[in-house]
Length: 297
Image (tube, rainbow, N blue to C red):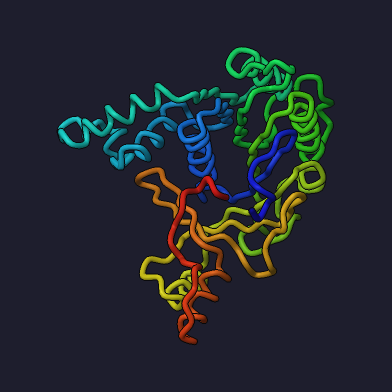
C-alpha cells in the first residue's frame, strides 16, 4: 500500500540496490509469487545471471532445501530432500514463468523480446486489452547500444532505456518491475540521487524504492522492539505517485534468507515501535511484527 496498491498497468516501478544486496533474489521472489500464486504470465529478463542460477533459487524457495545442496547435487543422497526437489520442479514446470537472458543485447532487441512474449504467451481479451501479466527487468545498465550515438553519457543511455520501457508499458498496457544499481552514496544516503543515471529514471518511474541492508543500529532497534531475530533488509519508498509512501525515517522490514532463496516482508519500523509502546502502556494492539509474504509490498 505504500506505493499505491502494488504493481500497476502502464507503469514502471523501480527498485534500487547496491551490488550483492539481494535485488535479483527479490526479483525472483516477486516473479515466483506472481506466476504461482496469482497464476499470471511472468517474463524475467536478466542481464547477468544464468537461467540455472534463477531456477536453483526458486527450487530452494519452494522446497526449503539449501541452494548449495541443489547446485552440488547433494540433495540426491537425502530421500526427503530429493522428494521435495521433485515436487518443487513439478511446480516450476506448471507455472507461467518465462526466463530470457538479455546479457549484451541492445535495448531495442530487449523490447522486441517483450513484444514477442506478449503475443505468444500473454495474449489479449475480447476488447483487445493485454491479459494480466508482469515483466521483471533486472536491471537498467549500459549494454549494447545499436542505433544510439556512442558519444552519449551513461545517464543519457539509461534515460533512453527507461523512456522506451515506459512507452512500451503504456502502449501494451502492462506493468514492469525494474531494478537499478545504486552509486556509492547509496550505502549511507536515502534519496533519489543515489540511483545511477537518476534524473530521467526518477522522472519516468511510477515508484522508486531503495532495497538496502539494515545497519547494526537498525537491527539493534529490532531487538529493542522485542524481536529475537532482527530483520536484515529494508525497503524505503522514496517516490510513490499512486501511494501515500511512508513517514520520514520509516521503512518496510524485510528478511532475506539467502540459503533458501527467500525474502519475507515484515511490519514497518514504526508499526513495530508503536506495538511495543502500546504494549508497555498496557494496551492491546492489532499490529504485529509477524512476517508476511513479499507479495504484499
